[in-house]
Image (tube, rainbow, N blue to C red; front, side, top):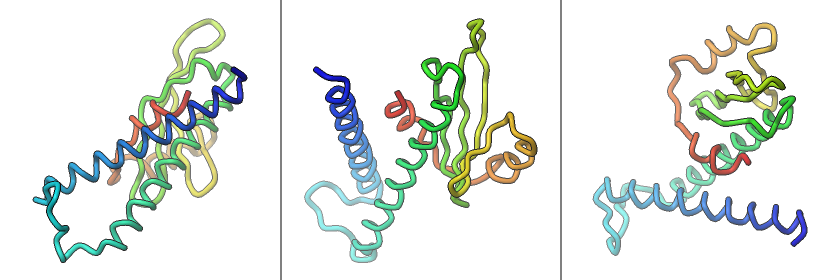
Length: 152
């Protein structure tokens, strides 16, 4: 089997896994609101709005994963990259914590922020203030599991 075929299979598996996770989340959310399987959705919930929100959330999760992949590829030793935290911030920023190993095998911890289409890492000047402004103490949605699943 060629390398491209293997990558294609893994991408397909990853997308199916995301769909199952999002579907499971939606089902649990429905159960918590009293919408058991087989019942009609409550009239107060707008189906087009819910669908739009789900699609926006899915797009943000995929963007977060792509950002993590970009960070990984920028590493000197990308094979040792490990996602520790990915959070979607209500402002639109995405915050990352990760670990890598240097040439000597020592573990290095790192942080990054994705704002619009620009990734800033903790090695860049002014990063600490940007982390404070965008990530520290902000309303967030943890999507670390997606990152660990899809960033390989």
